[in-house]
Image 1: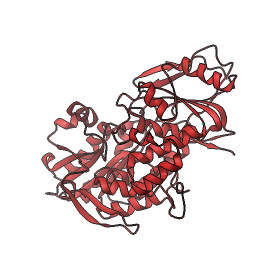
Image 2: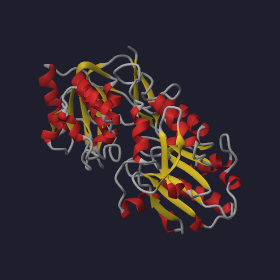
Image 3: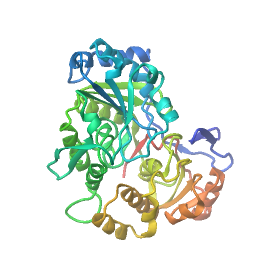
Image 4: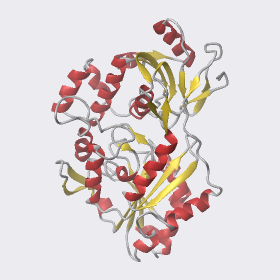
Length: 426
């Protein structure tokens, strides 16, 4: 199909696919998401009839202290749209607003600035609720040890509340299967060591390499997911609300209820829209991470790289648009590229595991299997150290791809690679 008017998101901007290079392109997009006739009505209906649980207003009691874990800046979850409905539930339980705390579940990410917190929370931030941010290194309480040996440390302040409500948004996660659900608590409100131990389960125990079930779209048999579920069960969350969003950040569905049952239902619904079959792998793939905040930093953008890689031929070219205004996303990421061999990096990771070292390993594995051209604001020398080519513009990236391939084949274009999971036929 001709797509000279196709635009790809890059940060907070949209870039057109340059005209004149391709007679046609193949386009990979999510299946249609039908918006509810009334967003407010849909949210209210889901909260009134939750899955596997009573409504929150009947689970909470007068005098309870309620903690609501919310997403940080790295993932937009429509928090400001669902909070008014959650607070109506706590109001109905006769719980004063000053006994409700919004916990920014930042995991091992940086702390949010005050303007960022206000933007994430929305108008309800001025309604009398309290706001705190989790800290992976301070004031933790130990809940126990999972059957896989993970020591479960979570925020003491969170656990001082009588009721814990998990919020977030459901999406694919490149080794935990799906985001959302249990991840609001672990790693969201967990200690750094707990996050490290759950993430380490990406590696198989019977030999080198990644565990075959630690991959996107898989929950059953996924050791990372199962360990996190076991850890979260020790905290006994009271309720969950997770949004399902379009790539344009519109709410098309929502799940509420039991923290595990409702999340699993939401994952199944999400996969129906965003797992998309492709007939083949392509020698040239052009992908956008989906814009801000999907491309806020390289660590977050890797999730789109991971998805797009599934549709790329071995030895082919993958162009990724990811602005990365926050750089790499952690000071513990880039130093791992002192290793230029994935096997050597894995050996050190197994001996001295770091969460973002694992992300570096995932990046290096891909850049050794195909040619990755990154359009970003990262310094060229750093991009090249990760095994990628750098390009200042999409036009420059396409010209580089032509130099590598000798000619420009029909490309697969993925405008929202941070959302869409390609399912290749072979």
